[in-house]
Image (cartoon, rainbow, N blue to C red; front, side, top):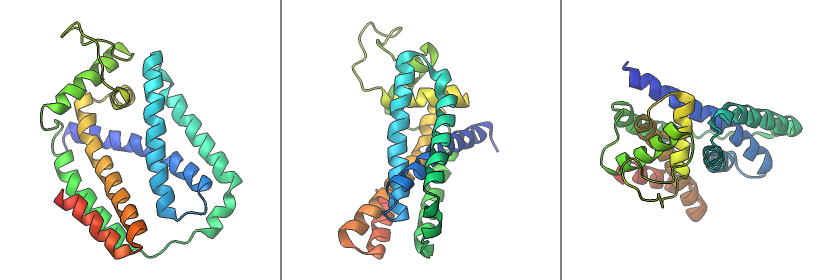
Length: 218
């Protein structure tokens, strides 16, 4: 296995480590909702909170606080789970072999191109990786395009700060992180499409077909 594959696996492991507590937290908050809904809400909500926190850390020049933030989220999630321990007795896991099989196929479908190269395709990723690298090297939000041009950066820097924070923790280059993020993001999109279709049509099969259509035909 190439070195960048190991780095990409390290990035994916950290993302799982960072988002799993939020699945637990949202599960305890929305305990009346189906488990799949709680997982999706936890992943989306947790990602939004994490990006916001990384942005604040970048603005303060305090990426060194990321491990402490991660530890805090795990402690908080365990406290929430301890207070809601009765949830474990009420878990109703339906036999959703088809759903998990399709989601697994989608993961493999996207993992092959994502893990086979460490450079994202196109010029747009280069633009975003430059901003992320500026934040990574300076340890703070990019205010100008120096040393390239003496002009102000007028672009939202949330995801760039997120990538720079991941680079700080995992020691990976921004372009590898950018490439690797395609896999979890596409899986999250697919899960969201499935849940939306299920809510609209009230049909599990339609949700599966919508997820397949999005993942393989877009």
